[in-house]
Length: 245
Image (cartoon, rainbow, N blue to C red):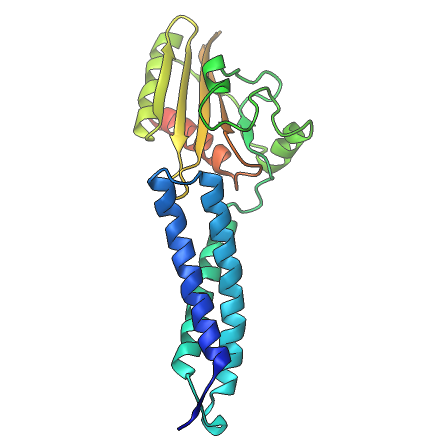
């Protein structure tokens, strides 16, 4: 009977464990059993285990080649396959943020950002602040360098009409609208990410201008440091709807 490769078996064990952890995190978040940040951390752990399973799997393939007389090559392939899959998912998540700066507070008006209400300040699960710039004094410069084209939107309609269009745009994007203040021309809402269920708060401000109205937004994550460009992408998607509707 041929000797079974222990390295190959261990690589498969690491790989399977990594996949279970990666899948379990989002499920536990959805069930409300763990916080989103903990779920995200669990995926980082799964990715680390995936790297280990890949390395051990490669060693296992070398040790189970035909001339070695050892069995367990299929387990080594499990380690390699799961490791590669998890690393690809991790790299895809990182690349989706591109060269986004490590910030979580983004606005179309750096010099005069819309302010959040006390309801947002006291929102459940909020660990970050709401006073701009949240994340340190370098946030404005990081935004200017990372998203140089992000700015206010000028529209020709009246402020009241634009506010209604903003509400419709927010709802079309799946945001949960929590406030529509027709007198102050403000909207507050929050958006929840699909996988890890991170919650980001948004405020929309409409002001009258000589040619109609000017729209400004601010999007701020309740927890975490860098957002991989999620807040900026959210604002851009909103402004594109307003421009094209």
